[in-house]
Figure (cartoon, rainbow, N blue to C red):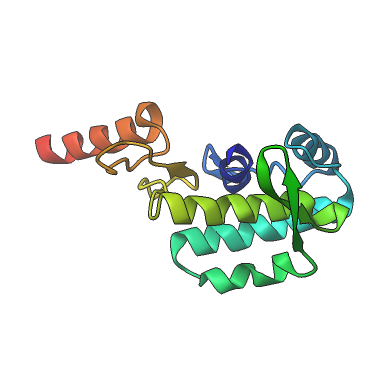
Length: 159
């Protein structure tokens, strides 16, 4: 799940300019390795594709079926262990991390529907996973985006 949010948030706006943590091969390799990948160029290309599709799906701009090409050639193999039935995902090595991220998204959609969403700040490109009881979180960070929005509203009211 951590890799999912990290991937969705790997294209933040910094001082109004988009930064891409996966654009530079060396930075991308480091990002992928920190999340359990191998950092190959093929893996980075697939991660960028998965990120862009997931961002559109989470924003409601694309249907979930847009993720289907990312799961081609992926199989789940049942295996009995001492803990019971366990499913192992088999995917091409360069696709494993992207597949895990898509599966994490599917798990969140099933367990916490509607809680993965974009930040309500129009000047932010980040996403959040709302774990609050009331399901009313709107900003990726209350200290940054939430504070800016509240200050903006206060300024408009008092002006």
